[in-house]
Image (cartoon, rainbow, N blue to C red; front, side, top):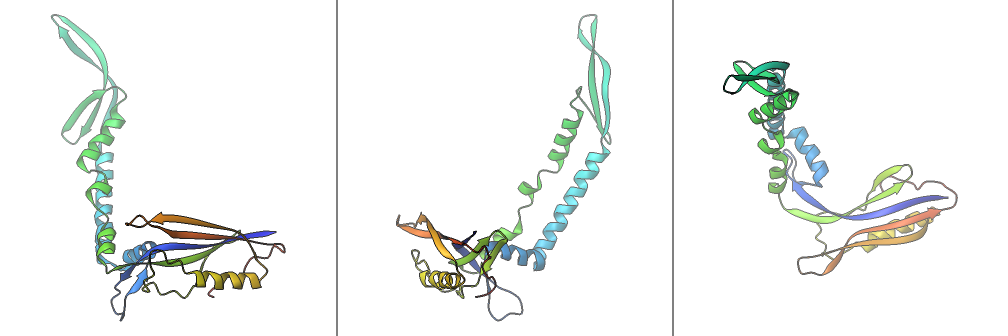
Length: 224
């Protein structure tokens, strides 16, 4: 016996403008990021800045000279002096005394202060580009999940066709289920996920059709 899941997902698209093409491409966030990283000069500049920052961090970290567990004397008042163990960390002309065993942590903190975490100091340019790149659309995509993997199902949906918030594309789902039924698949279960729109009304955001067949053959895949 074999099982499969036909899943319909409500997703966001952006009208991504592509130089040299008459119209925009309607892309979800993940493929839009792939396009941005492959073509946008802003991304190349961002990567170069990140890499330069990493090189400076590494060079500063490697320049640290550490002396571990050094015995020094401390005045305790009057004529008494005590012996304590410390570490010394030197960056160029800057020499720092820290508690024994704390040298490695001090080096990390010192480098972080000089070159803070990249995620906070160098914002990813993709997000601003994606938000600014044309109007957002919501439409549907479908995937077929089997033991052999997950493949996209071509529904022939134009993402620019505005469907109402409650508008599940039932006719496309029935067409694909009919195709799978002709291959011997039987519907076993239907699962729906709901969300609420700004007015508080529920609408479908995901539908999963669980299928089974007794001969164990996987469903045909490809563009339909």
